[in-house]
Image (tube, rainbow, N blue to C red; front, side, top):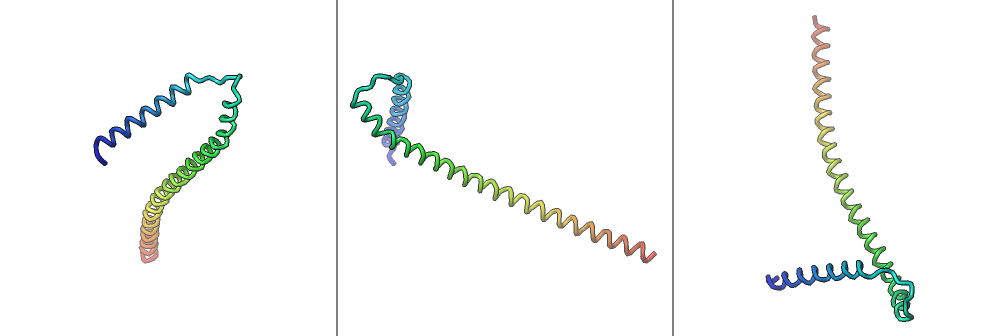
Amino acid sequence: MPRWLSRSVLVTFITVVVILIMMRMTAPERANLTVVEKAIRDSLTPVQDQFTSMLRGTRGLIGHFAEVDALLAENEDLQQQLGGLLSENNQLRENKQSSDQKVFCA
């Protein structure tokens, strides 16, 4: 991507975010809406609700994958610990057998 294009995309994004923040801060709820404003509000509410639910679903899905990734890492760590503990257990059993044989032979 050309450098000027990436700068223009970044500037556009920042400008849009700033404008949206300014609109949100300077537009308090009004009680007396015109018929046109009510129609626009009422027609866009379901669309906004759908986008909001899609966003929540996406966050949930991403959270699920992050949780699965963390569980896989924990599982790998536990498998390594298990391997070490099994090895240590086998070593202790061999030591016990060897000491039992020495006592039996003596």
